[in-house]
Image 1 (cartoon, rainbow, N blue to C red):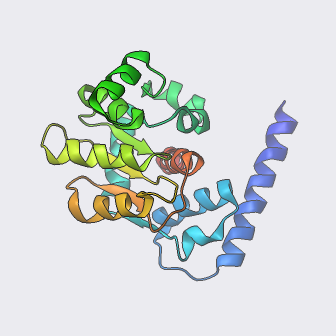
Image 2 (cartoon, rainbow, N blue to C red):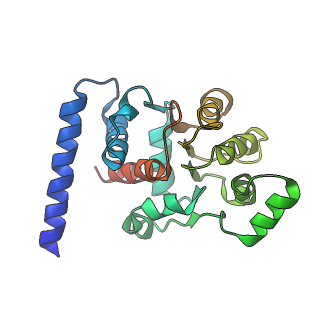
Amino acid sequence: MKMQTDVGKNIEYRSMKVIDNEIGEHSYNEYEWTIVKRVIHTTADFDFAHNNKIIFHETAIVDGINALKNGCKIIVDVNGVLGGLHKKNLRDFKIDVICNISNEIVKNKAKKCNKTISQMAMRESTKYMEGSIIAVGNAPTALLEVIKICNERMVTPALIIGIPVGFISASESKEQLTKNCRIPFITNIGRKGGSACAAAIINALFKLMSN
């Protein structure tokens, strides 16, 4: 088992060196680059450092790390984000992950209120949002709903990771996050994103905590 672990770490180290070498000079600071590099490593997509680059609110990393240290809740839009999180980190810091996308009550409410299930899942998670990290990797409607909730001054999350993927409202939801939301954020430009990216950002925050 230890041999397998060592081999895995060696492959990861070499992969990170490949990313460093292929990107070369960039505008990110050391902490931001740890996160960007983790997303590139997860997706093999160098565009996250270029046209679809990841952007950071000035206090996002510090606020995210402090929230994790304090055992905050993590609220995610889909199970794919949960699946990509390192479970040992969650156990070690006693962090609960909340995902309401498969909740039958949420589905019924969404239908009655003429909302997407992703919107209603976030609305139903409002009571957990204070001081939390919210990670949206799939649904732009979920991110737009989170922005609306925060702007209603209902809650103040510690950090919003908004990196939904898609062709309808993905770019626009990220722009809303950067321009019209008072909460620290990590997001990116354009249509690219995804659950794996959102999970990679959280995993990178955990890694920064241990450095």
